[in-house]
Image (cartoon, rainbow, N blue to C red; front, side):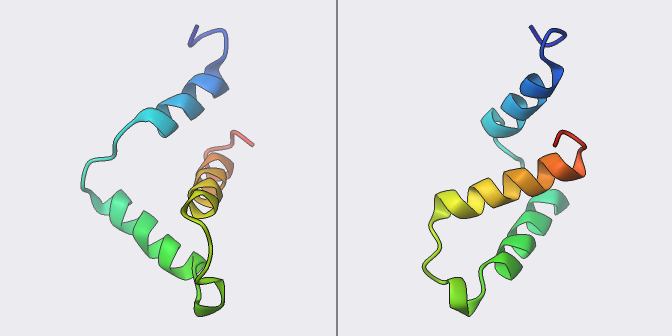
Length: 63
């Protein structure tokens, strides 16, 4: 199925994998800090997660 739907496969792997502690994880937390400012303190975790996935997919050329 990976060959039939390569983009969906890539997105699923990103969603379902558990990241190891790494520099990439620290960059994600750093981006999250800048995404959530004092004005956005009430942002839902799901909204932040969605924003981070969209940023990653755009950077990867999926969208």
